[in-house]
Amino acid sequence: MRIAIVVLILAAFGGSFLYWLVGQYPGFVLISVGATAIQFTLWTGVVAVLVLWILVRLLFSLLRALVLPGLHFSSNWKAKKQQKNSRLTYRGLLDLAEGRWASACKQLSKSAADSELTLINYLGAASAAAELGNEQEANRLLSLAEKADPRNEMAVSLTRVRLLVGKGDYAEALPILQGLHGRHPKHPYILSLLQKSYRHLQQWDQLEKLLADLRANKVLDGEGLRQLEISIRAEQLQDLAENLDPDVAKNKQDLVDLWGRTAKNVRTAPQVIANHAALLGQMGEAGLAEKELRKAIKTSWDKGLLQAYGQLGGNLAAQQLKTAEAWLKEQPNNPDLLLALSHLCQRSELWGKARDYLEAALKLDQRAEIYAELAEVVGRLGEHDRSLQLYRQGLLAVTRGKDQAIAVV
Image (cartoon, rainbow, N blue to C red):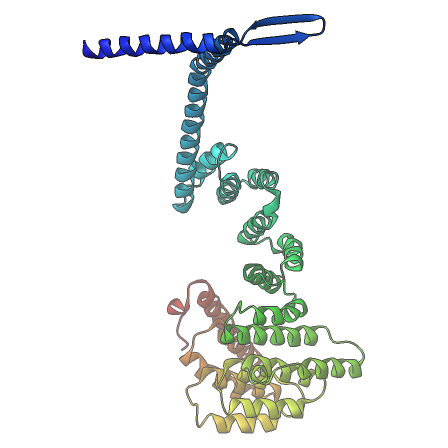
């Protein structure tokens, strides 16, 4: 009641003040447009402006009442759709990690177009499709990934390469890797895949050129790098031995060049020494080869070194046999040394002695290789039935393992 009285009093005072204000400042407003002129009092104009302002406010309120619910609905719909896509992406990535390839491919590809992680979705779906053996679908998804985010071409290319390498298609992966390496020469993963591809494709010269980048970017540790260098040089020596030129001088110069760029810690590797010595023997340098092998064997009873010593060409068989028989005093139970001695005896046509060494080796190691060697030697001695028996035993050693090989009588 009191509030109503106060309001009435304030209204009376306000009305009186307004009446006085209108009387004190009558004024007028003139609006002229072309030949038309409109004149009204100042206070009529003020009232008109207030009324217009109120109408505009009412119109905006009406529009908001009509439009905002639709906008709110659209926003909610988009949010729900995004949440659904996020759930599909999450489940798809989880299935991918757990090896559920079909489910992963379906969920990741389904949610890719509207996902915030479109590129990731397509790459994951492509990987799952590849695991299912669906190469066509994997390529399609990778193409969509390229279109979805052209800026991340490297991620798509690396995924494509990884899938190719995973199925052993190194020849197709190599050009892509070489292109990536040209644009990103310091990328460790690209370097790792590139060296792996070169190794499988046996491109040893290209792999040798890559060593500097592998070393500079620490793709392999020190020992891993050394082992890679050893493999490269050993294979290059083997390739040179298998593809000798009719020009002997050229062959020797190629070997000098190859050996000249071989690091000292690589030259001492048994595999490299064995291949180098074998190549020297092929080039008529059996004396140098025998000396190199003999020196290396004194520090390592390596199987490859002993094999190379036994199979070395030239006319040093008698001298080598004497040397190897001296080693037998130190290594009486070394089957690889016994096998080398047998080879030396065969070169000297000492078939009975060769048989003795092979039989001793076979008692220590029932390898198919030794069975085959012994079968050939006893065949030369006229023991054809036993030769056939040994061939059969060697075959059993290969197909069933040495535990099932029949013991030599």
